[in-house]
Figure 1 (cartoon, rainbow, N blue to C red):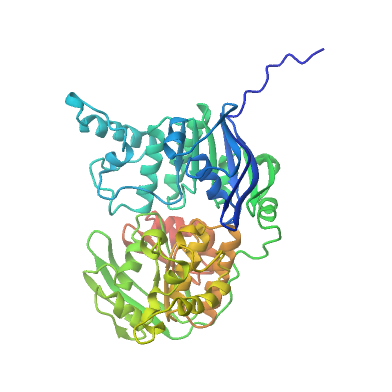
Figure 2 (cartoon, helix red, strand yellow):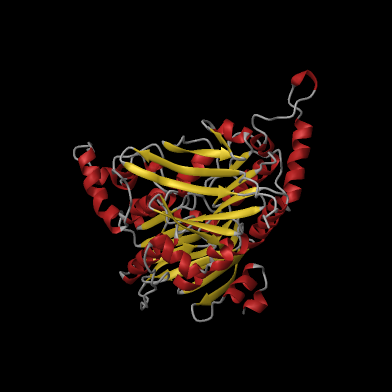
Length: 507
């Protein structure tokens, strides 16, 4: 008897044998992939595997050299982001792309503002719609406040609200949870599942395997711009996916070396900044890795910025090797041997239009200059050794740093600061948005630096990273240190108790 079951509808979106090159670099090699209604499709691969190029092809930023994109089985050309938006595509990029001087509501409805009498913008309606979107997300951000100064977490939530406002049929989520707390992630996942259940086709990109396995229905693995594997999530496990991603076994994600701590290199005593943190005190010895843990908004990033002098603290002292640092003087901090790798590498760590070698030498320009002149050859020579040590993947060191993947951009920021030979390294979210293989490389490097006598202060929102790399864990809640846990006593439960203000339970 003939099969009378209805034929499966075409995918909402399909990439068919898509290839894309940038000069001599082949970013995509004949990739095919389907995004189907009511499914969450995870796309995984190392940084540089081609995931961002896939996103930009879907978003209308890059037109494929060969191959094509289909919507509902019909071939389309998405030559601009506006084409993709009209086709029902919404993209939440790994890095927020907000207009800092505009309000939250204006950012969400940019180009689609509701109009009232005389075709003037109806700000009341726009504000009301913005509040409705945040209510769906289970959060509140003032619609009228400027986007400048918002945390990475809040910027990501605004990007999510912007996507929701478009009622998109295809939702592409490129590392959307990288800077969100556990509660915010769960809220976002609830919204994502609701969109999926209402028929949206979702492409989800993350380096966090717990999220991938919790949210996705199917997984496609890429490597070196090409297709490696596609399978239902239920048929895979983490070890298999990692092996497919990197083409080899990743033996140790947290290669922590045991080191006997030396002299105290950093002392922070009673550090306070109004409305940010209060009475923060700790010390770090040579060879130690001390982690600042806590939920987003606990004040961890604000503390390391104040220690380095980017933000001026109101009271308290910072000493490096016994030398008291002046408030709000990053140059004095650098001279004393401090280095700060910031959380937001694109806005605070790099000058995106400059070359890899120029970015990597920004902290040493006078030292590398001769008679006040810094040549390209000197920049390349100074950068090359760090690029090799950190395994920076770049076609040419003279290329703009914006052309690199997120993980390689993070390595350039590390190279810039490590080249100064710091005694104390402050590093904020060292592996945010980078792949498992690069994470292992960064962890290995931090362990080596500590073994060589550097003091490391690491801010991290990833508990496995905190527990795997830290000799001591300082947990913050609402601007205060609520627990100090030695490595042997630190666990997910004890850290989370302290991060939510349950000091007794943490103790």
